[in-house]
Image (cartoon, rainbow, N blue to C red; front, top):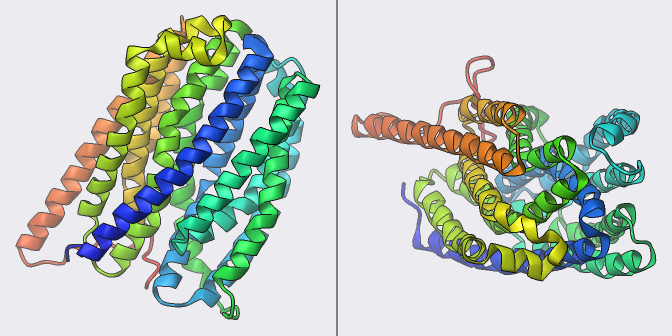
Length: 443
């Protein structure tokens, strides 16, 4: 079944709303990162960006919480069962808190070795990272609910307010205390404030709908492969910065950190589409509609937007890096285009992975996980210069993207042949130990 004109309009409308919301959030976040870079200088900024890369890694690794809540919220909302959304939110939050406790203890024990391995000037930035991650956990649940019910206006308010608070508080803190830990503390204060806003927003989602019991089996079975997917994506997007921090001097790592920060423009542009893709394609799949057209449309929108920063970073890399961060960061321009290209390719890999997750098919993990292993091996054995590091990252991600496209094309061709033969071209159910295909939540 093809998607309707109303669904096409829904894709466009939600895409525009999320692009505007995430674009404003990105502008506020970039303004704060640039302010931190100009205030701290290259060496201290290396600590700041390395700590943030660990935060970004953990945030993406916690993505299974958000993605699971999003998908099953979309399923329940499509059936009008908002009481189950209320139960899902409470149960996931409680289970996450219990699992997080030993993880936090382990993280605190690892702070000393990580401080040495990553050449941090003190343990304070890593202590703040643990606090940021702890506050992000409940926010994953809240934002997953808002995505699942497709209340993207409220979602935009949530992320914009957090970024605005972070910028205002961070500028004040850096003016008083000029070090990486003070700059990172602004993230904690922004998260604490937005958690209060999130509680109010969730009450409006299920207002008038009492809690209903849910079957936790499909939720748990979906969480395992989505966890593997998001952990792999976290590695693709963030593992290069800690490795550079380990292998190179603070000054070189600071220059790479500046390019890393600016290249996150691609990740920011990805956000509205990754936010929209899972609930939208899940809803279409639940209704028996084919998702390929909507997925292709979202990819085209993303590439069209990403072309802007890629072209700008190609034409004026030195002007952009020096103009934003100051003359001390002049060397970052030579890295900017390559780091940005790596982020772009990795983002396309992630969109393909999300499309597979939306239809409950995780066979792409047989390509996605080895792709990350290839990237780690490439950087480990080929890191003579920071430019060689990013070239190794880009090459590994290109190989992964090609393999994912071939896998997707092969699946599409197989389904088309089955359809032409009069067979059933729907996704196959989950068979434990047989394939990475999660059980359909509707069954």
